[in-house]
Image (cartoon, rainbow, N blue to C red; front, side, top):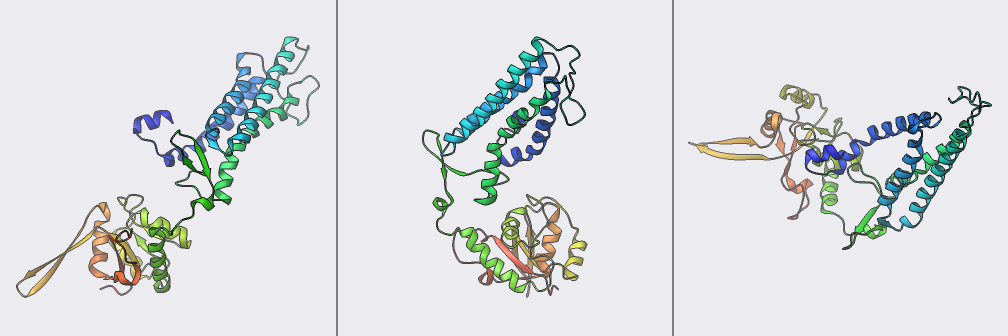
Length: 321
């Protein structure tokens, strides 16, 4: 992670969370390998007790910033892990000091301790130490599941950072305040889309992930994002998009960065439509803006200068030209 974020020259919690599954896999592999080394002679057998102590100390360092939880989490994690590590170290010193003739060094394949294998009885002790390292991650994940959702894949409680850098856990009740303009804007849009959706499979289509995310989370309905995270990906050609509209799969499109310029040529008015920052989706968006009807913003957008949807236009393609 240090190498990645050093090259990237920035830190983003989402990308760190993306590395978590691989780190968990490496941790599982490491525990198995360190246990195998622990039951055999050699310096590598000391890695398991050292890893338990160092990992618990690192967790304690992270958790001690969270005032309110640190008073009991830090002593619990460090206390259990250090006790387990010291017990494993003492047992290893005692067993290898006077090896029993014919002692088996490997863990027996059966689920029972072999007569000469004194290490196998320490396996539950090692498991307790490993589970102790999961106490903090379990509380962090459980908080996001049962109390308050995390942000961009992260977990854990919301905190207030003091001027001295101390983190104080903020309860959900303390976070309540006036409704966000984002929530207000999307509520009215959702009401309009749900009442006019008819039998379309998708609630709406968006140009990028930004406006799609709150719609999906609020309605649990399918929303088509034709441009991916930033709007530059291409998932449909213009022909495919038209086919979906004709099939009734989708009726409404929520797009922005569409500019209309009307010129008067003689007695005729010609409107030129330009699409900005659309990547390979410019043709799709231009077709929607040209052939579909623009829904009046008074029907779905609340008034206000700070409306996050003020730059968007809602298009109805149910009866396109």
